[in-house]
Length: 403
Ligand SMILES: *Cc1c(COP(=O)(O)O)cnc(C)c1O
Picture (cartoon, rainbow, N blue to C red):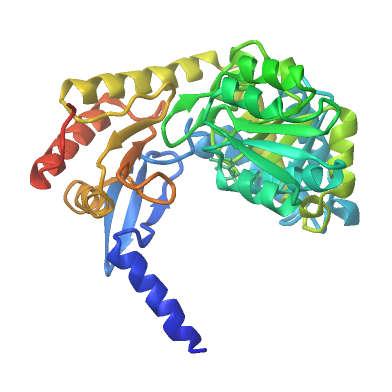
């Protein structure tokens, strides 16, 4: 086997399809988000970032930064081991208590990322619950898909956000058989939102556990930032809430929040929890501070929603093909991988605006798009520049406008 040739050929294929990923080399500037320095070749440019998942700009909040600095000064750099081997610090315990309280659950469990939280929890439950079957939304995130696959239980896929189809599929199983319904609240590529209450009604009627990924909602929805389940008044209907500390909370790490027994079960059996070093205490300290700041701040949530609504309205007024979205995420349809990449290259080279192209396999072919994430710190001036730049790029590439 000529390994190097194999790798090179595969990469050429990606390039030919226009979906080879090139990372923009950026340096974010705390205190000056959403601005960053773009490094390319021997030069640098000041750019505005329009696609960050640091949705609320908490990654630069001075109170969060100082909590992290204090924790480094007091506790040092790393956690010192897995949670079992000296890695459970006071800050980890405080953070888990905070997360349990955020979701009105008995307990919570930290993981090194949201990805690992999904992978570990679903694979552990899927493999350990006797004869378990998992029902998974057709558009679930890769981390859930991989978790379900790793658990090797039976798996069925229901049509996206379709409680009726879920009901049909569940009807094929004995009520006593263990089942998990796995879905997300906010789907971050289309910006649509699951009917959580209806999904829980169906799951409950069939005796299934519900597993809800609220990664794109925690901090941003609900009266205390508990997510869409809180907003919809159905938090107590969801058995397992999964979230991240990396998006609205601006740091890194993931978690689940659920009953004491379930959390203890995953803590005691989940390989992706047991066999890896705990999050550094400084990350736990930063996340704890960030959550405590975001929880009561309904003004911040209102400003975030206002920015998203304003951008959607203004894009629609100019005829740019903004896709329908029920949340803070603003997708614009391009419909072709190569053009999508060219559009984002032009935005960066000619307008110093950074948006990354969203191509297959993240979204279906023919629906390639730009995905904008306006935050409370993107002001009207930045929005003017963005819209002018998009119109210029749409003209240059003769992209389709709204029908
Ligand atoms: C980002 C994301 C994750 C993973 O979270 P990380 O903390 O970034 O690992 C999980 N689920 C969904 C839907 C996501 O978009």
